[in-house]
Length: 100
Image 1 (cartoon, rainbow, N blue to C red):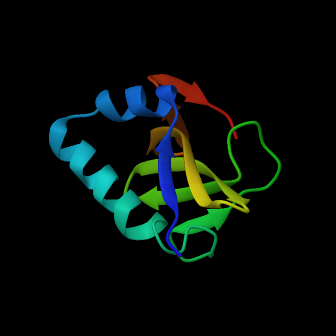
Image 2: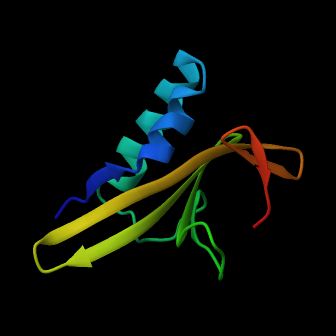
Image 3: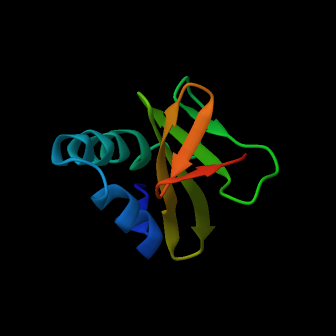
């Protein structure tokens, strides 16, 4: 059973802040990586430790997609919380540096 993908308003604005070809890379990765196996750890998907951001992280090159997996009786969904990028060891989300 496939996961339904939902974006928060903040995550949508984070994606729109990137250039068009970067948006395509991010959205394609979400479609390929999270629709069927969002709750399975891989080289590019990992369950995060305790933090204020999200349960899971998807790495797409320099980009990071932070999301929660929601499993209910009606079905499974992925809620994209935020999208950012890494510059060296710093994470930027919505133009601001974030600590994890």
